[in-house]
Length: 151
Picture: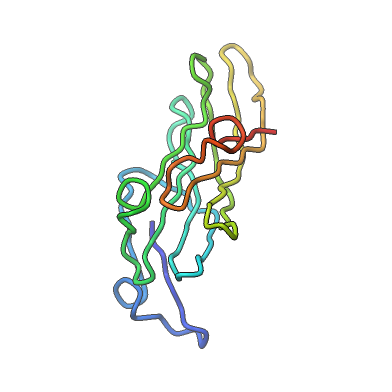
């Protein structure tokens, strides 16, 4: 993932990463789709893994410090990967996060689409999915069903 930060005048913010650019190796293909800035200037990015269809995709949340480095206090070294598949199913889930926001209490909500492909069926069962995280990236199990709400 490449994150670039600019100043209000359009020039690169050299305090962010190297010459305004932060490169984060997530170990697999990743598509970024949503961005939020916390009050403390930490940067939140939402997106999803980009895997072959037979493997399914997962929501991903990344948090960078104001200087562009990974926030080691968030998830696992700045990254949270969320598999929204249902336990005990043989379905393949294509989960794609498209948005992220920070609530007033500091909790983080990631939203997107969850497509369930059941064996033998040609069409997916599509749901809007929301996941709420605590400020440090753990799933907020008090929200929805174990931190996930699907509509």
